[in-house]
Image (tube, rainbow, N blue to C red):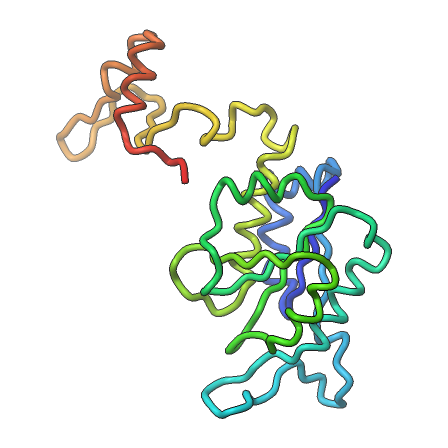
Length: 222
């Protein structure tokens, strides 16, 4: 079973999605597990603050290093002998692709560090190198409020590659011929006096022609 460890200040922001639909079923069937550690549980100040003003000035706040380190250590406290990936989610990271998802699916534990505010004190990353190589990814080219949304995307992309999560391997689009255009029944629909029909080639049952049509369309692979 592949276990995801989300290091996040807002586990509730992730759980609604990760407990639903295919991912929720995969968790119930013990194909994946999702655990949370919040850095706030490891702060040592009386205010429960996990952030401070940045050295050198500048806007916003920076998440402090040691609560992040302690949260990761707690997540992996009894799993250090396993095959572990530590994933740092940040806008300047390498763009996350299907190939990266395939590689991560080979691990037993994946730690996803979700930053917030202006980022995380860089010393946390340096300390955590003792846990192994840190893989730094960005999900899309936009900048998000925090790392939670990219983390959910990584969990989704990796989980669907595990045997049995989607029911069968053919359900993984990038492993088969797929096009951006898809259709379903009914064959013809009417809207405001106009008729919209499924392309003729898809109604022929001729598999070679259908495959050729799909290859002529922009692929959804990344």
